[in-house]
Image (cartoon, rainbow, N blue to C red; front, side, top):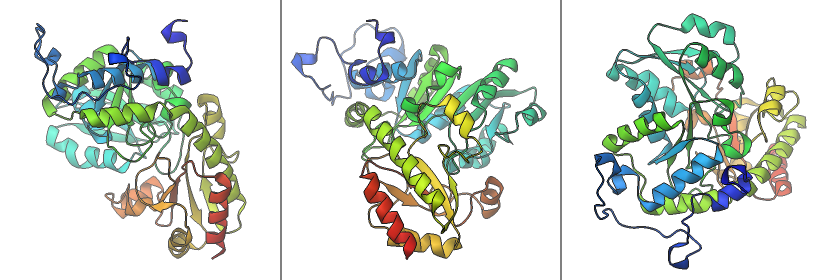
Length: 385
């Protein structure tokens, strides 16, 4: 069987592994060395050095990540934000313009609204579900369009196929943050996206014990981003590489369980009289349910909801749960619960959050791999109080 014909479960385990195994080790060793012997490389960027993200631990991850999404190349970074910022600063320069989805992760939103001006880069937000309006925001200097597979924290799914068509029609680089879906549920390069970004801190690692990022996509673009990263210095250390490498191998079993568990919890909440609204693309009443069903292999492990009692009810619910950790981040094996206005989107002004539809009482849940029945029972008792 050709490597490219293998199923994703097999790629998770075997792609990128050294062959033959190093000294017979089944697990990839940690190469805890900053420096490697010179081997005649002619380019600075080819020297074997940790800061250049090209030691054996990095190379194994790069090959595995590219294979998972059917891409030509991949690159790991020191964090998800390092992946996002380095990518944007590689494809955009002074005088360029970006189109960005109007509901982005808070850190990305802040980088666009608070840092872009320092680089002389401009942007416009576009309504994800109104493709007919995108052309009105185009400028002669527009170079790229950036969206998210599933938005944080409202779980919207925009017309991703139209994003690719629009980018190709207008010669734009298409960039997508695929963190919420993971390669198990959606593989952007297979649908025509130029660049796929991940916060590997979340699902790819899955154990809430490292911070890392990834950029996956076309060879020429990844090489360009790699050179920018080499100078900015956002490298991933070998031990974090090892932990990410290990965590990725269980991605399929974790995410598929989380898909199933989150779906059951979303249906439970949707039917509960104390719940005003549930945001989960797997619900039949979700406005993007049909699109998510067509595009994705699973609806993900993230959901958000609002209670009828407002902020007080939301805070009381969070305090009364016993299994979830009240904490930011997502995608780990443990269930996490938070109000985005206090964590992921706290850097936005109330006006910006209102424009995005993020209410003060919105509760976001990252479903872990605990018993689904236990989580529902815990949520039920918290709602009763």
